[in-house]
Length: 178
Image (cartoon, rainbow, N blue to C red; front, side, top):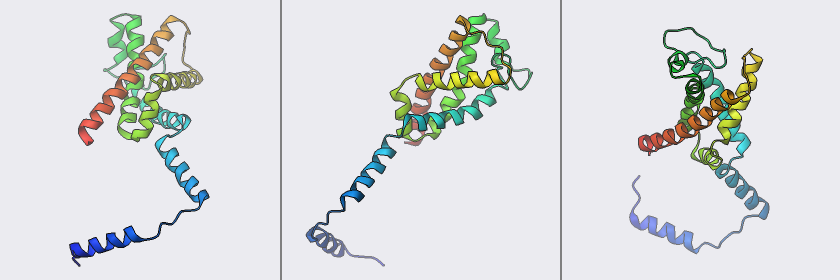
């Protein structure tokens, strides 16, 4: 059924001449709060989503780069063995970057723009928290971690890699999907 332009004009005119109805204050407040929560998600909620992504992605990276002695494979392609050739500090920094980069890329591609804005509001902090929680989990699985300068270099790699990959992933997402 094709409706004419005059029908739409008449319908719009009726809309404009309708007496305004003010919604109840409770309803208006509830709708406003829901919109506010969707546009500004809680940091803890976004951090939980990031950590769940990291639980999967970080576990996958352990196949190619063991972290503090915890890994799932002794395959031929081992990032740690490659990076060790450049020294222990480069290896720890690179392993930190590798450990979190897939998680950051998945976050950039799968989280809502509002959630990414929350992560970007605190540059590095979400990845630092994720790394510290991951460290606790790795310790539970028997990781041998010496908390010193080497560990700090690994943390620096995690924060740098996570923040940089999140930005690259966001730019990739914008260029591909927008």
